[in-house]
Image (cartoon, rainbow, N blue to C red; front, side):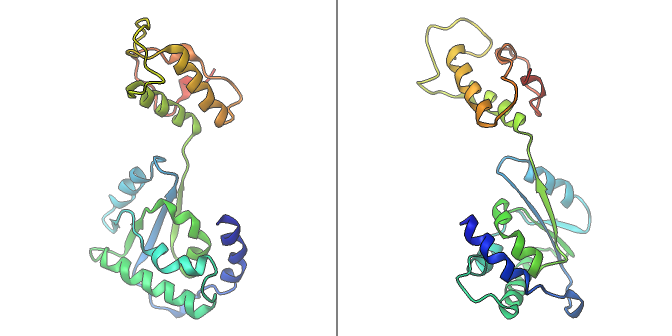
Length: 205
């Protein structure tokens, strides 16, 4: 899919829309990123402004743009303009009469090329999460997990309930390796009742 989208982008970019010749009364803000990366928080912050409506995860980019994005329909200015008009029409229905609307459908990252071509006035916010934070999140998730391959009835009290430290260690080291951390996790920090920091900063040596 990614190769297909990438190969179609040059044809899409050649048909950019000149908004100086178009009347527009609504501006989208696209918030993209991986799930659990903080897109909801970013939308809440942005939409706290009196001129902005937070519309949540809207399906309209995919609904109107998928065929164009994947080259399954002819890529020309008329079709890109049609995508633009269809999207903005639906967006206006979600605007509560405000001129700026957020769309935080995270998978819209697949359509950034089409979005920047058809909606050049749009703003795009890409939310990135520090991988160390995922390590912290996974630690707390595993702490609460009830999984047969982690739990043991014969474990010492370690502040983590009945979770085998060695099995937990293996799971977390594997997670760190998947993220290609330069340093291994400091396992002595895992088995405490202290609340783990959201950025995971205490979890790496």
